[in-house]
Length: 214
Image 1: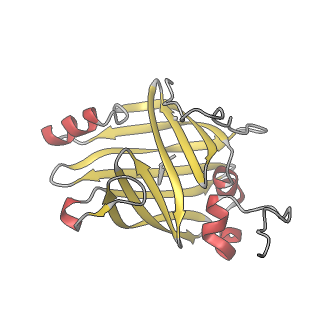
Image 2: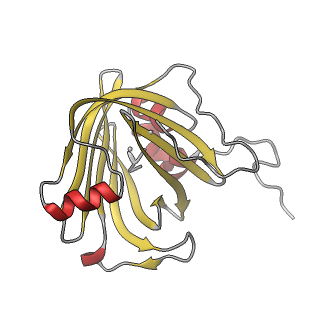
Image 3: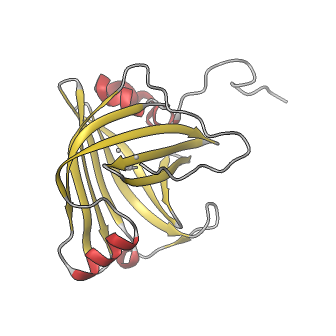
């Protein structure tokens, strides 16, 4: 049986470099640092909430970030199995998700909902193009029709030595749930901590889509 790259001691690319392949080199250095895996970052964001009653109720139930004109945001990305765990905090409000690869697509799971993205490099920026959504456990998700699918729009582009992040999250019928925008910079030497062996990942108390999940 042939040996894997890992078994031969050849470094295995982390999630985003592996997905982008040759296009990884087209990203600006600051964007690469934020998506190279095992990173800590900090920045300041403006957060908007949807105005409708349904949007406010859904955003509250999902513990989306509160509206704010200027809030400190922290990010820690840690390896998790064959993917990554993105731990974000908007002030004291945590927002976490799991990300992994399926073929040439990035999948981001938020609870029982998974959003599937095709990644593009455009002018040094990383652009997330959502192609579908599924509901259920990983590997057993039911594909949602477009009219029932949540929608996430995301872009992470260079701005001097920082990364300008712009993310919008929509829900069916309710429309915009939350939008956040601001600049974030990777902290020097700030590798994210690994989850303790034998324990499931804790939800942070005080932190990617971007989500997205960026």
